[in-house]
Length: 182
Image (cartoon, rainbow, N blue to C red; front, side):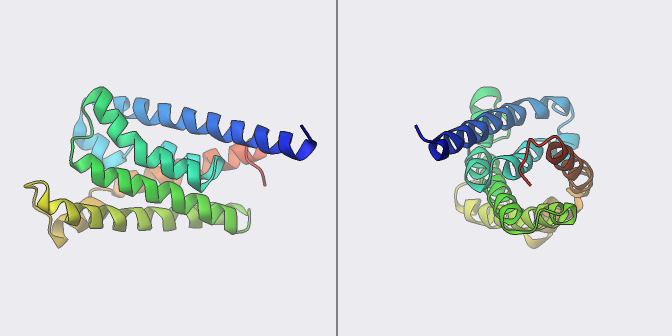
């Protein structure tokens, strides 16, 4: 095995391990708010590990974790409720994909962590709205422009603030410890 192959193998193992930890956090963090669903909906604790995974492991791993986490959590703990969890799967997939791609493409300065995070959160919420519209035929759940604005923006403000406040700090700390490549 040559040096290049060893480096690629080590990087793949690191990404797979980080993804596994992030998936486990997707299962565990909602328990912090599980007793009060309104707080869980507002803070979106499952979104945090998916976004972090995008920074650490890259777009592919984070997209897979984002897509898989809601149905896996539903299978294990019956939340998030289906078919709402399907829309959430696509939302989280886009979060992971977009944040991973932007972090890969943009300069590695701290300001771009915020830019990557905010753009991915906007893209994910748009995809969530599209997925909810597509689910109208599957579920008898109403979905209007007002419900989109309420769910994607107004009710999500605490989670948006939380994500913008803690995720960049975590990523910057991981960069300082060399857990994430510059």
